[in-house]
Image (tube, rainbow, N blue to C red; front, side, top):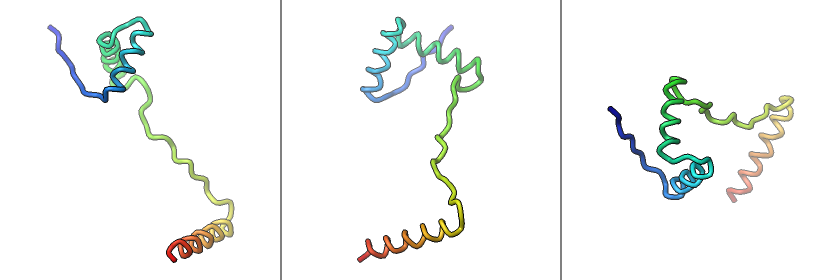
Length: 81
């Protein structure tokens, strides 16, 4: 017995998927079967799924933080005029 799985994606994504599977010498259906098998074997995604780390750097000194805060406040006051 087998089950049919279906999903909706944007047209451009679907076309890119079809073209990529063609270039790999497989079909969209086979690619989906491979994904489902890998997903089940890994008991989850077979690749890392996470949000990127925010690119925030701490201020080196308290003075640097205060200077930044002052510049930001002055710019916001200027923009409000």
